[in-house]
Image (tube, rainbow, N blue to C red; front, side, top):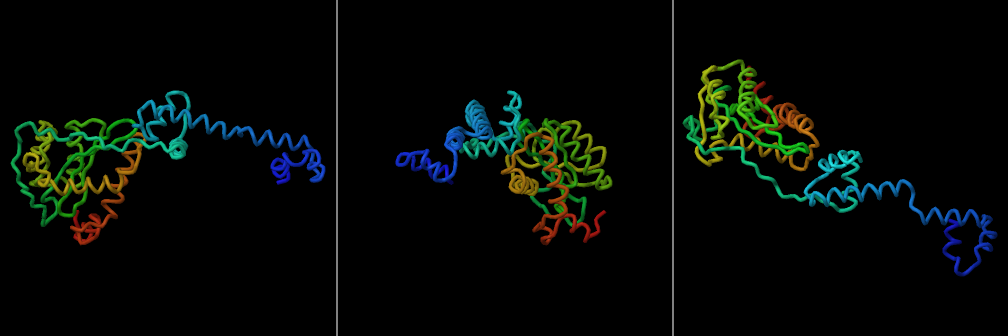
Length: 288
């Protein structure tokens, strides 16, 4: 406070006089003033980092958020954690473009191999009577992550799921295989999907045949034919994916796993179940 007073009144009173009155040395005052004029090492480091982050942000034409910028910085030999980059972007008012990417997951340019047995009847009187399937995609800092699920219409429980960086037939087959195992290999289940080419593959059809399951397929371009699966993905995107930035596929997989197995199946109240979770509904009905 004394040094600040001396600096403020230096044009009116002699510095040596004020220093004498306050009992401080003039050399101490000049050293203090030098420190005030020069930025601290910490401030200099932050300024340098901010400039570097802005450089990478501009180089990407404002398309990258903090997860991708973390990777750019790491590749250039300036590793930073995501929190540091996010804080820098906020400080500099740098916001990644919010335009949503669109990626088609259904290739319907082919003749369907199954009739529509479901016909938008989403009610099931018993477990393992009707299953529905679908696929979606999630963006990560390392590229797309594809998710396939199988859902039992009786309880709305996700009974099978699979994730992969590739949208191949194995993705939907693995999800269906998990559902078959988790339900004890039931026979005669109607298994409904959209018209995606993965659901028309030989591997998928062989799996249905092996376990005596009845394939069913939506009409052309009619999302309402698979509305329950679409509704699940909408909830997943709103409650987990949107607003999240996954640096890697591994992080995204963990988040999706926890959302499905811990939150959705066991905790999320579902209107079709009388506002109890799929797990609680099946427990109440004593589903095996």
